[in-house]
Every structure is written in C-alpha cells, then in structure tokens.
Length: 339
Image 1 (cartoon, rainbow, N blue to C red):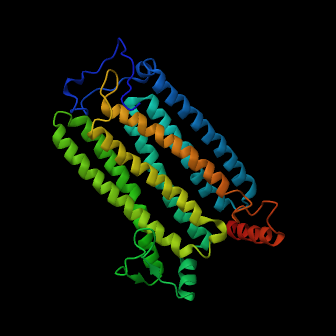
Image 2: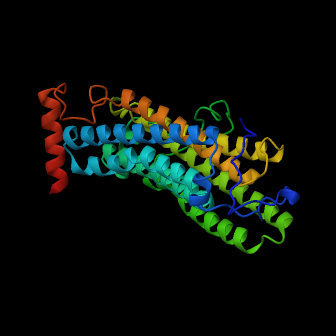
Image 3: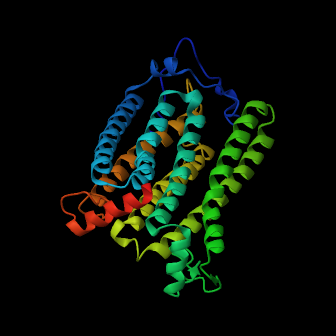
C-alpha cells in the first residue's frame, strides 16, 4: 500500500529522474490531485473525512457539556480553546490531504494550535488554583518544593534539584512552556522561506532544516518537561478536576505528532514511498502522515469524551450529579470573579 500511486493526469506529471531531489519536485493543485486518485488513496481520504466528521460531532458534544455544565465564564473560555484541539488539527490535516501544495503550511498551523493548548492548560490550572500567588502560598504551606524529577523520563534523575516554590520560580517554570510557541512560529516562517528560496542548493537546505528541526524538538521537549513539572505540583489539589488526565491527552497528542513525523521522515529516507507520477515521495509521505494523525485524533477524541464525562470531573459544577454545596461554591467563585 505504501508504494501505491495516483494515476497519471494529462495536465500534470512529475519527472522522477532526480528522485533524491524531492524538495524541488512540484506538487499538483488540489483539483488535479483529487481527480487523479486511485481506489486506495480515495479510500484513505473517505476514511479521513468520516473520522473528521466524527471528531466534529464529538466536539459539538463537548461544547454542549462546557456551555451548560460549567458555571464560571472564566473557566469556560480556556475550555473552549482546549476542546478545539481535535477539530482544528483534524481539519488542517484533512485539508493537507486534499491540497498537497499547502500541506506543510497547514500542518504547521495544527502544531502551533497544539502548543497554544499547552499554554492554555497551564493558565487553566493556575485559575483553578486561584492564581500563581495562591499556588505559591499553598505549596509553601504544604512544604512542597518544585521538583524536576518528574515522570516519565526524569523521575530517576536524583541529580535534578528541587527549588523553592516562590512566584518568581513558578513563573520561570511557566516560561519553559510559553517559549515553545514563539520558537515554533519563528522556525516555521524561516523553514517556509528557505524551502522557497534555496531549492537549487538542496544539500545545504536539508542541513539547515535538520538544525531547525533539532532546535524545534528541544524547545518542545523543554515545554513538555515544564508542563509535567507544574501538573505534578497540582496533581493532588486538582485531582477532582482530572487536570492530569487532560494533560495526558494533550501530551499524548503531541507525542503522536512527533513520533509519526520522525517515522515519516525515515520512510522517505529509505524509499518506502515511490515517486510519481503525480506526487513526489515527500507528497506521499505527507498524505500518509495526515491520514494516520486524523485516525489517531479520532481515537483521542473518543477517549477524551469518556474520561471527561461531566459525572467524572468537578469542573462541570452545574451537572445534576453535583451536590448543592458544590454548586453554591461555584456560584460564589463566579460572583467574586465578576467583581
């Protein structure tokens, strides 16, 4: 299936004589590409459309839960951002499958939105704590320092220090997360510019893009590490809100993006995809990349629907299963915030 190709279109054909120089090979327009699909690629597209529609239906259900069962407006707004992760990402990937020329740009949008969701998660956690100052005060009262020995990679690293949970130190850990959006946007702009301007010097282009990708991955790992650190600090206090599970969903989505991105590059390098007649090896790699991620996002969306049913998280304080006292406390919090 990996080596299946689209049927030759009379208006577009790739010259695969220099197959190694796939950066210079043109991509077809969406009209030409969609009119040239074989049964195999058409089946993949239909499955991707069905999975994306499923994601949007579940997103509408999530929106209903948040709109009707979360009383605090200050809590609803960040949740709107978070529940948009799956539909926005799947829409970008589906559009990338249909428009090979715009695929890399659309994939970058999905990545940036996912990074924004990571930041929104941290802001939501702080809001549930009552702010950074209240979080610092509670950690100091409980004699709980900021530990960088967090799972899954650093729990056994005894050399990593623990620091005092002051507001300044908490802000520094937060910036470990915030920096990744700026880095991702800057590197994406640089990469798109280089791909457009350096197609005659492919070896140098690939070297520079590899360096940029390394910086990008280091930035992302630093953000994930900082988020792990903060979520671990808040795990006990915010356990009833299932914030740790929410972080695992976002973390798992990022892992899915990164792992298959690496896997896709390996497949291209070792010629798992054939070139032509309409798509290059890179174009076919992008097509499979988007298809696999859409399927993964649909599964993650179903999992999120199960994990965050209003009965299972106290953030849905208006749900009928919540006690009268919980609803009263939530109402008082909303009144205080409006004041």
